[in-house]
Length: 377
Ligand SMILES: Cc1ncc(COP(=O)(O)O)c(C=O)c1O
Image (cartoon, rainbow, N blue to C red; front, side, top):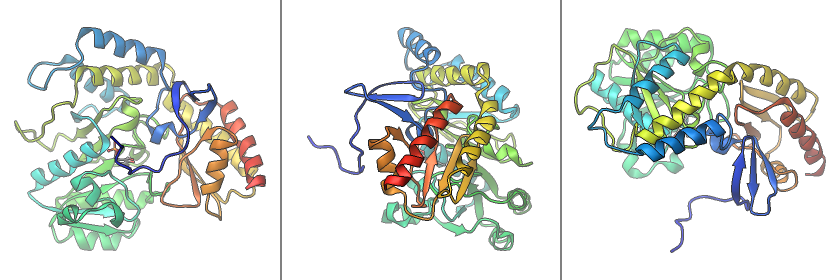
């Protein structure tokens, strides 16, 4: 049986991975500056992560959400402690897109409305409502177009107010730092306006932290750089360090009702153990705090490369923008220098989303390789 051919693949076959390195079948070592789309947070196969999952697997891996599962309460307490969002409630699912579906659906239940505002360049996933709020016509099927979505540019407060004043929107969904879109950010003034206009006109504000959350940008969630209180926060990716888990944090203004949301796999024992292990390591190794120092080092190194026109992003969610398309540069980095990097819908931007355990010496190695690759492409 063939695989359904939807992914253009690099010719690399990882067989094992350790911390910031991935090894192929010939034991060739690749430096992972992409973390498999920002998923690897505490490093590949972290010993504590492996131990916790193994121990859980030997006890009980799964039971449905029809029984008591104290690991879910433990996970909620740990997220509350590290995010300082003590009064929010937690609903668990398994992927980022599922977190977005649940956030949008909840905002619609809460407000009784159907329309959503999203932003140019947004990426929120591939499932029904999630892909409809994603600004990419090519990945929306006719079925997805039944959702009523208005796309606006960041920072146009007037346009936002004009739409919200119709009082027909259940939510405004945004990424504090756009991931797939290429690391653009709304201004602080706009973020504050989004919050106050949502309150004024009765819409929910959804912060999509699927990529930027769990300590990647120096605060637990990237939106926490701004003085706002979203109604719903979505998370996934780094939450499980490769184990599929997602979730939403829900403001106490939104009340739960039996049957409102549900899932078979969400919050299972193994997934909770994986995420608890991630949170243990984040805290013990102070990884969130370290992202800022590493960002400074990265920016200093990038400043020495004239071809780099702009450094975008925050913490360890970074981008290098050039004035040419970077497809062949990324190919040279992976095949000639054995370094994984990421692309985005901005074809001139390399995305850097390493495990949060990365060190300056790894960035030094990357920039040395980048200088050589730039000469040779
Ligand atoms: C900001 C953001 N939201 C949602 C998603 C969807 O997550 P998943 O691929 O786990 O469904 C992604 C994935 O890249 C993302 O970057």
